[in-house]
Amino acid sequence: MTASMDRRNFLRGLGGVLGCSIAAHPMLTTVTMAGANGGRALGDHRLIVIILRGAMDGLDVVQPQGDADYAALRPTLLNPQAADLDGFFRLHPAFGDLMPLWGAGQLGFVHATSTPYRDKRSHFVGQDMLEAGTGMDVPLNQVKDGWLNRLLQTQKGLTSETAYSIGQVAMPLLEGPAEVRNWSPETTLLLTPQARLLFDKVYESDPLFHAASQEAMELADAGNGDLAMAADPSQMAGLKVQDVEQLVDYAAGKLKQDARIAAFSMTGWDTHRGQAGGLSKSLARLQYAILRLQTGLGEKVWGKTLLLAMTEFGRTARENGTTGTDHGTGGVMVMAGGALNGGKVYGDWPGLSEANLYERRDLMPTSDVRAWAAHAIQGLYGIDQSVLENAVFPGLKMGTDPRILL
Image (cartoon, rainbow, N blue to C red):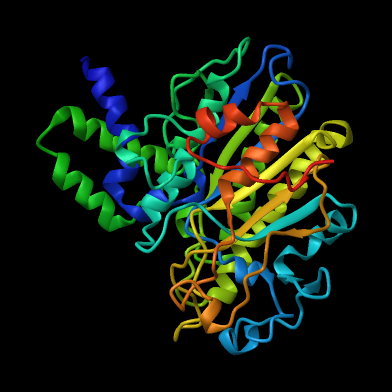
């Protein structure tokens, strides 16, 4: 392997060296596109999948305030400003600008849904299972592709290009033999003075990697000079929205052409403490992404689009002592788009009494999130149910069509 390739691999893996704070930074988010040959292979509909990394608290996003046990479980998180959806569920205020979509039938939710993953509640395993699209009967270390890639493998006539870029977060959802095109926005690394000193010390004896580390620090300085001084929360919020614009605008531009599938991830959903503030910021970014997609795609393409935003698992039914919530089980999937039969909260509600909770702590899952994705794919692209249950989501039983599409 050449020194040039070693150097590129070093830069590509830089996020891992710097730790979780950079690996989870929103500006390291990846957009992955799947292109169709003139739209013929997959028809004219578009599918957008957003992975919400960190376990979004569905009980706070779509609040079951009509459940008699909710208020006691969530004394500080219960929000009287939440907008009424159907007389039982209410929508978090940070999603308030989506209410016109709800009224137009272009926004919906699936409550009390989950992957088959249970009990351990590990972000890493939960996300791997969500993106693999398999059940507990298949060891994750034996899964070599994600469910969206397996969907592409079932189709003929697909074309795509792959490009290398620095700073990508892996999207196992689309990894596999079927070719896809990968793109990520220009990334900016946050390096503290201590981190800079550490890099100098660790790599000073190796000319090759010392030069690479110096280039990494130059990248950190070059992208946005104000970023290193962005202690003001309003400045940080602005930068995060700017990043959403990059992701969404690129996706919308490609989806208006030959691309039929886009997938990207958003971080910031792990709310162990101070959930009210943290969740509001993450929801505001997701809301912004949805509305900007609607605008960017235009009425004609948006009308043929379905967006699914899913997370690895939900959070505990009861808030904890730091006004947050811990890793749980059942959660919420967000759906939007002109192809959606929305204005509804789908799924069977299990109730929040202690006897109805999973292990007496979590919202009980009453559906498999894979089934909703499978029915969406079937409705959008006419894929045969046997292909979905055996090739795309091995071992899945889709059940009755919930008719989430128009």
